Length: 235
Image 1 (cartoon, rainbow, N blue to C red):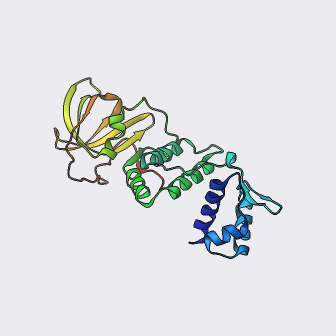
Image 2 (image 1 turned 90 degrees about the vertical axis):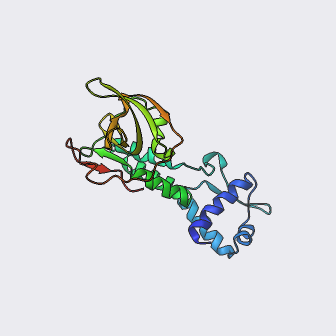
Image 3 (image 1 turned 30 degrees about the vertical axis):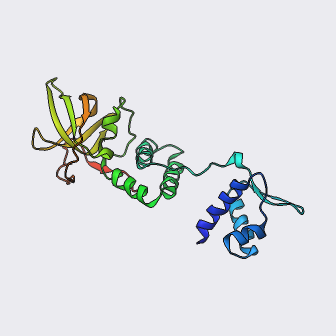
């Protein structure tokens, strides 16, 4: 076990045993290291802000204030990407750097498979225009919000800017956000090409059982005349 993993494991052991203390000798035996190593680890955790205290006496040891810590949290890829999108509203505020740090911690806490899925999902979200805050949009229906993760063909009823209605089957490929407008980019089987559908103009949505063959968005597909398209910050 490397030191980073051991530091995390020490906190979890103290949390599991709370409010009873664990001695340095007990922790040393648990992690198969020297008592002196545990003492250095505890000191490092305390200096990093972990609420770990020493209780003197024959029955003493180290204990953690469980009320000031959180148990392990399993984030989904969608939750991690949601944080990345929310970060776009932070530039220029005092909380931009802390928010970026929080996102890094979220991804670091995820298992390898979920972290890879989050990075893949993040690569499918694109921002249109200069670096500026992403304004809130109208609520997006769950079937559309989950379109990329479900990897199924969607059947939608759509109304374009002129009010003309159409029904079509689409293969979701990504998102583009422009200010307060969100677009679902998809391969449109009706038109035989990539199209962008403004989410607030999708009148109804149904998910099919069909899983389409994988497609990728090319730079040409995202060559939108209204501004430069950029991706989310790396996760």
